[in-house]
Length: 186
Image (cartoon, rainbow, N blue to C red; front, top):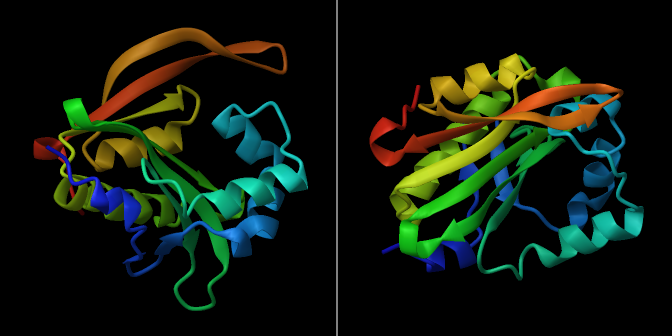
């Protein structure tokens, strides 16, 4: 059985290059701005722009959510917003949950930030929440993200053909998963 209080606690997790803190109202400006970045939107398959009010409401309500974790990814030194991540769709009876991460700008990719954030949150998911399996969706063209997920122990479990239509082209979406026994902390 999972530890549901670990979802309510909204942890702060610290690594060498990232600091994960509960997503809150203070992140609204950066969260909204990240949603305007065309490349970030393409990598996440996000067609719709959130309004500023919607972004503010989302950030303001995360602390009260007891069935998921929504964390901001910050730079440890200056607290600069680097992105956000979520552990969501928690199925307590199956000890599984979904995972998603989005860095807020392409300039933050290739530095190991996403890998470290993913490793920190997976360690929390497996050791504190007590999950057995974590899954995610990623578009097949996002090779950098796929490599990061593989390095953390995820493997491809399925392919949803032509699931994303972006600028007139169709793209496959991969389902990847990692079991507690397969998690790798590098």
